[in-house]
Image (cartoon, rainbow, N blue to C red):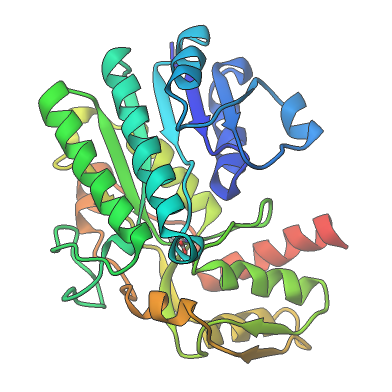
Length: 315
Ligand code: SER
């Protein structure tokens, strides 16, 4: 029997991942763990919820023991833009939190740990188109540094202690249920909200800035499929997953095909430098070969669904 703990469960990925896992498993076998952001009453009512700071080892140990957890999806993280404003917090939460999760997994002999790594692991000297899975990783942000150290720790805990840690390098995730908190790719989500609410949007990266992006449904699919695949098929612990790449201007044009009045201006701030340090697309052939990774959404399919969902929710 699988009993799952999702950290960062009130965050952008966590909220939808919890719901997706609860449709695949028994509702009560998926425990949502949140800390900073207060969950809605609906979310609390939708299944087991615990307040848990991943930096608190005792709380974490209790949550795992009390709920007989065997699998953790560790989604709690400080994102890149907040991380550049507060590198110390980013280091503490991302590196300290991940270390605690891996230690719990080792001590309690958990079956599986799923991690969200990021396109932010890439940096200096990597081809910006189709960045390889096994590139040299020299990120320029603290967020990237914490994600690289997370990947290295994952490999170490697997080879040294046999902890089955698996990870995907997620790009910017676009979703309609919960806003992302403090990432560089947040402009893509914000643009949809502005369009649906009839507002003009001021984008914090240049119009021609292109980054890898993915619709939430595909991100969840990547995490759950990688968690479920037979271990013998995996050639590595960390996988690039690619879906779509577009510039901020291309996104605005895609939105305008559905909301013709939408307007956008571009005023780059400190986040431009972060975006410029990341690749435009990833080579995800190892994920495609090893566990059959395939995304379902392209830009216009995502735009249609995002706008429909946001219209239902916000207007
Ligand atoms: N969406 C993340 C960020 O912008 C990338 O992992 O920080």
